Image 1 (tube, rainbow, N blue to C red):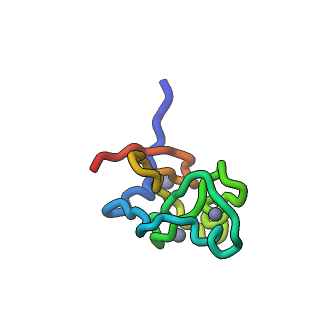
Image 2: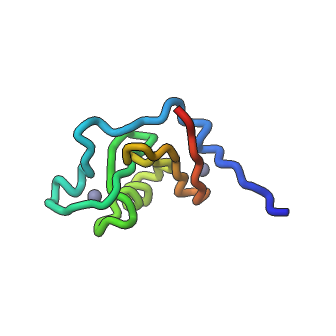
Image 3: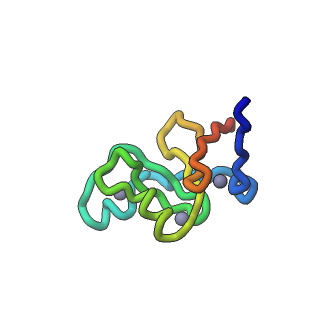
Length: 93
Ligand SMILES: [Zn+2]
Ligand SMILES: [Zn+2]
Ligand SMILES: [Zn+2]
């Protein structure tokens, strides 16, 4: 039986932070790039683009800052992703 790892990083998060409207990747806006999906960093609240986007700013943000958890910023998607544990956690609102 597989032992399910638990992500301790989620304990440091209170309410899920979602992007301010209009939701944009702040880095893509700066350099004129475009994105596919958006993710919001749960440590600092900034919003960046997903790994399907050319610039992968959410992953880059994790490597630069160590901020471990992002939430999907897409409407109707309710999940968190921890880069450290590589674990997705659905949540309900
Ligand atoms: Zn974690
Ligand atoms: Zn981006
Ligand atoms: Zn951050």
